[in-house]
Length: 141
Image (cartoon, rainbow, N blue to C red; front, side, top):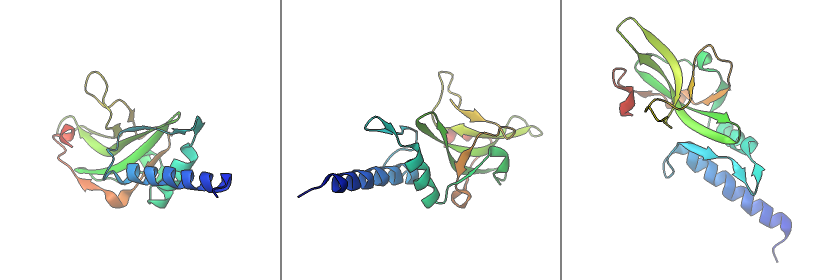
């Protein structure tokens, strides 16, 4: 016979498994994900799973990221997780800026969420998963 505790345990396991899929981005597209389950904000559970997947809390300014590389990251806005990258945006040969840019775009096609290195906003990054990118064409991820 299933007890309430067993049902809760199974639901929590399914929730954590779903979060792992989002974080890995293999079978679920990493984008914007609502962190509400059964009417309850479960952001704390998502953050626990980020930690288990080696995503550490920091700021954009605290991320070690070379030009031509991008580092996967999540930011939590209210009860939503947004996936994006920390990278260097190139304006000219002499003008670059490091930022977090969400994969979710706004109506102009720009990053819906942009976080500069001077911001104290917490992001969760996994520097061990940094990838090469074409600094001249960052939209072609």
